[in-house]
Length: 166
Image 1 (cartoon, rainbow, N blue to C red):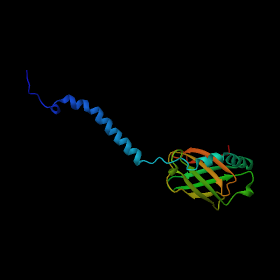
Image 2 (image 1 turned 90 degrees about the horizontal axis):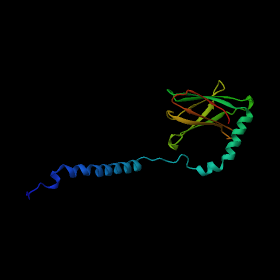
Image 3 (image 1 turned 135 degrees about the vertical axis):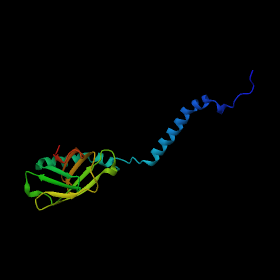
């Protein structure tokens, strides 16, 4: 009988059996690091107030429908310019400026508010702060927030988006 044996760390089986738990510990550390470093943020910080204001929002869409409002939004990716052609049954009441909110579906940091001023051709022009990529919801409204038009798009594939009241 051989009483002299090699120490445990010289055998391959203890090392092989430790690979699984070691990998789990490393994956846990990586998960904790990702959770700490990446900030998910809220979709909307005032989600409760937005939920309470749903009736007011519906009345704004009804007001747009009553005025016969429709809009065509054109996004020029290379220059960051946004152009809006607003059509109404009543041409006399078009506002001097509009606000276009470009809302990211999951990250509030991806939202943009674009001020659109009326140009000489009767349309509205503004400048996006950063490139619009991915799926977005577009909300077009007047400065007094009496009406609004809503639409959704994949900004990477659509250059012209039609907005209509619901």
